[in-house]
Image 1: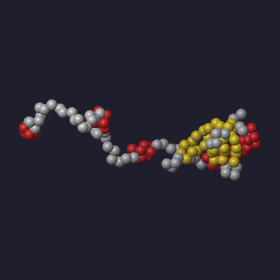
Image 2 (image 1 turned 120 degrees about the vertical axis):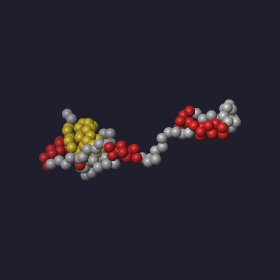
Image 3 (image 1 turned 45 degrees about the vertical axis):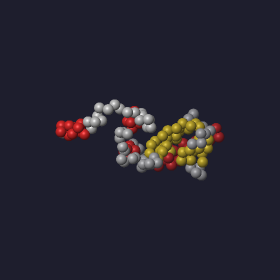
Image 4 (image 1 turned 180 degrees about the horizontal axis):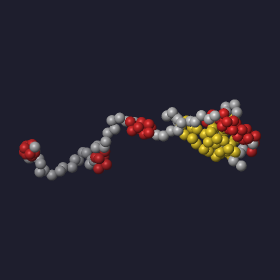
Length: 142
């Protein structure tokens, strides 16, 4: 190894002690651009995103028995009876995930604009909507 170093020194002996000459044609590279040359390379683009997605927690939708469904129907009927005053309702519903099996449970308190029994959905003042099949609990705020 030491002999290789000596050979290299002899090979470049004529230029090794010359002063650095700055190029007139090429601008000096910034430290940021110089460092970027040595940044890590992601050979598998998107692989990290896939790993993060696989590790993301989602809940499974719970299927409810007939008693719970009947209670939801009673709550919905109370709300339909008072729809003309556009009541504030608290709705807990299951929002399916677009990328994975499952989803998450969400709760909103919002002023209800309309109950669409044909499309089976609640329509709120802010134009958001929740379908009956997604609803877990429904409460009329007094």
